[in-house]
Length: 255
Length: 261
Image (cartoon, rainbow over all chains, first blue to last red; front, side, top):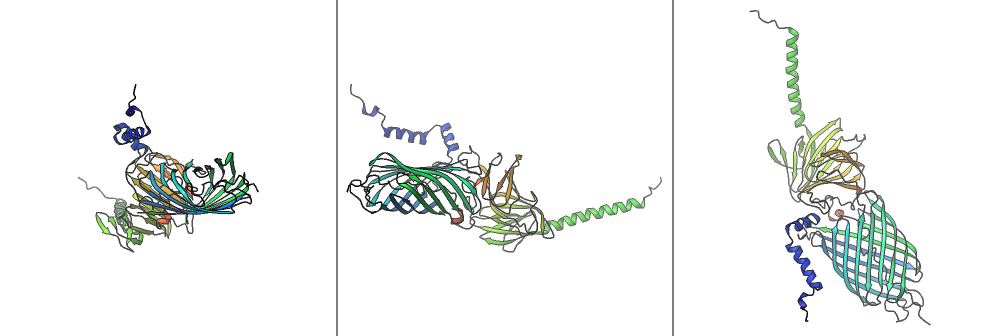
C-alpha cells in the first residue's frame, strides 16, 4: 500500500506545529508563556553590546594568540543577532603535523581568521546561549559551528557560581573541541569582581584518536568601571604544561 | 447668682496655652518653609510640586520639606541636602522629600520617598557614623535603610520580569559603599543587609532577595532601567564571566601527530 507522503511527520512539519502553537496557542498556554517570558515577541532592539577580546595559549607542543571583536544586537528581550570575527596565530612545535589540515606536514606558523554569525538566547536571567556558524579563511578554510552556554547559579548569594560550556566542530580536520569551566565569585566590590575555579578543554574526532585535552585551575578579575576582564589559567594535558590568558573589554550602546 | 471667681493661675495657664499653640503653629510653618536642600545640577526639565502649585525646577532652587520633584524624559538633576548628602534623580523619576532634620549641619533624620524611577544617594558621613535608619528611602514596596554612603535605588512598575511569576513592581538596590538594610513594608521583619559590591531586588510583596554581586544578581541599575549615571559605558548590565565563546572558547586543536622524518 502506498504511503501518503504528507502523513509522515517531517522535521519541517514539527517546526510548523511548534510555530503554530506559539502563534495560536489557547489562552491558558499564552498566559503561561506570558508569565515565563513576558513580552516574548516584543521587538526591543535597544542594546548593542560590543566585546573586544584577546589572549594567548602556550604549551610545550604549540601556542596560539587570538584577538577579535563580537557584536551582539538585541532584537527582543530574549534573543539577539551575533557576529564575531577572530584572528588566530598558531605556532607549532618542531616536527608536529599541521593540526588544521592533517597530513600536510609540519609548518611552524599558521594564520587564519574565523568568521562566525548566529543568534544568542537569554531565556533565563543570568543564562545565555550562543548558536553560531561560519568558516575560516587563511591557513584554515573549513566550516565551523559553535555553541556557547554560560549560566550563573546561586546568583542571589555572596558566591554565585558560573558554569560555562563552549563547543565547536571544525569540518576541515573534523575535530570537536569543547571547553568546560566552573568558577565561583570569590569577592565582589564596587570596583572589581574576582572569580576562581577550574576547567579545561577536551578534543575528539578527526585526527585525534580517542580523546585529548588539558585542564587546570583558573583565576579571573573583572574591573567594573572599565568593563574589563582578565582571566588566567594554567594546568597540564596532552600538549604538556600550559598557560592561558584571556582579556575582554565590553561596551554597551543603548538607545 | 454669684459671678464665678476667676483664679489668676487659671488665666495664666490659658495665656500660656494660647501662646504655646500659636508658637507651635508658626514654628511648624517656619520649619515647613525652611529649605532642606538645593538643586545643584539640572539637565533637561523638571518640575517641583509644592502645596497645590507646580513650579519649574531651576538650578540653585531651594527645596522645601514635602516638595515633590519630578524629572522629564532625558532629564536628570541633583539635590544637595543641608548636610551635603546628595540625591541624583534620573529621567522620568519622581521623589518626595518627606523629612529632613539637620542640627548644626549634622543629619538627624532623612526620609525620601521614591514614587517611581531611579535615584542615587551619596550620603555624607563626615564627622559622624550613620545611625541605623537615620537616612531612609521608601518605595511603594521597600524600605531602604542606609548604613552605607553610595547606593542606587530604582523602582519600576508595569514591567514583568522572567522568573517572577507575573510580578510587575520591583525595587532594585545597588550598593557601592557601606551597607544598606532593605525590607518590604509588607513584611518588615525580613531585613536583608546588602554590602558594597552587591545588589538586590524586592519583588511585589515578597521580602528582598539575598544580595548578589553587582551585574550578576540582575538588579537594574540606573542606566538600564531608564536612567543613566555616567553614560553607556557605566551601564554595562552584567559580567558574564567571560562572555560565552570568547574567553571560554577552546584553543584550536593541539598537534597530536608527529611528522615522520
